Length: 443
Image: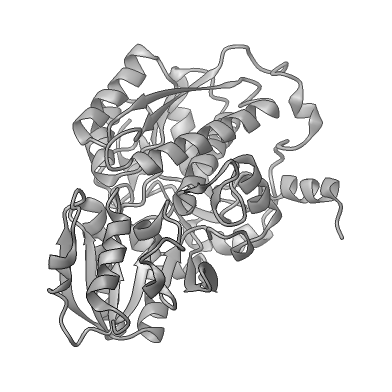
């Protein structure tokens, strides 16, 4: 068995960015590229910022502490703090400590724009980071562009890659809905059925699911039997289930917010034991114990996961290290409270994005805001991130044109009261041709 010391050395060698390679060639590059050194584990890096400055890199964290995104926001904040603590323990960013300044946006688009402005002008942060809910991203990103401050989101909507935003906005370490659906659609239509009803939240993130699932179905010879949008603040759902046609083979569902447990329970009450096959995005059960009363009918159903909640679903040394640092047990719950189930399929993006910022700062030589242009151009030159402690979810391909990454996805089945990974996609399965080129936009 490899010693812990040797495990750490292996992770150290696989942490780092690939630069200046084409997106379409990056999958091969990740497997065989030369690697630029980065001392993420080396004790020499722990010399308390001696090589840098006592002046911190100030990162403004836009948190969903309240509103419908509060569960995600709490775990995003926990992950962010864990990543910052670890990075500081190994020497910070370019020898400077990270300081996280947090403001609550209430999961509200208008308030989100105000938070971006407050972080940039009152707190004088170097970067703004962390937003999840797509309508908040859409409300906040234009203000970041106006203020000319780099804005790193940890969302999943297609908003960044679509070209709808501006050159200051990046989504480097979590895949978008278009890529996720592209990656798993062949498995869904090939294994579960061809007549599919879509249930999704009634805002931008949900529309991405509607549009790209519909496009994937058409490409695979499948048929969408219904498209059912549900308000994100809904607290009762039975009236929506009666809209699902009887010829439906598969219910494709994705819901978010405080009503997710009620949504799943009421679906079970409506159908009982005789129901179409179910394929859900884990958003419908993020933060929810799969063994909660009323969820028994989910046994045998399938879910998309970006990072498996249960440790045995992806037990690499990097993912195990990350799981321990954020304080999550083997079932995906908090080590300090087994009833507190994490948003495990999303929150890794906060950890990874901080490391991506670290790499960009160090490679660009960033010192202050006057260096934004160089930092952005350096980031746009990245072709991907190798799997390891900095990127525990897996390797990523990064597109400088779209400011968006591509990564692997997981399909898990509910069996014996847990999620069990039954399929893992390749990065290539989720890749698509860019529809924009931010590098041609002005700064």
